[in-house]
Image 1: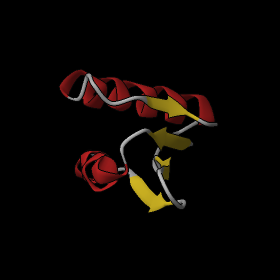
Image 2 (image 1 turned 135 degrees about the vertical axis):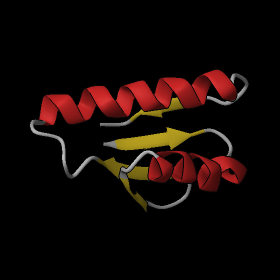
Image 3 (image 1 turned 180 degrees about the vertical axis):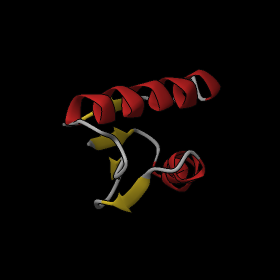
Image 4 (image 1 turned 90 degrees about the vertical axis):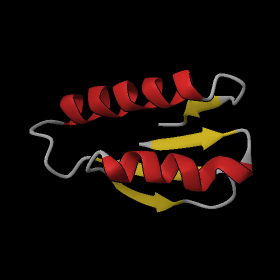
Length: 70
């Protein structure tokens, strides 16, 4: 799933957040990253897990705009 973040300075922090939780992450250029969960049994489960972990990161970074670009 593609995720866009409003603050380029926090891209590395967002990537690290997902990596610590076992996700695969690739920078997709600029302020976008591609996050996948290779061990998720279904695409729907992968999406739910990405959304859950993104919500956690948003809670700790409330002033940063983050959106799923799908």
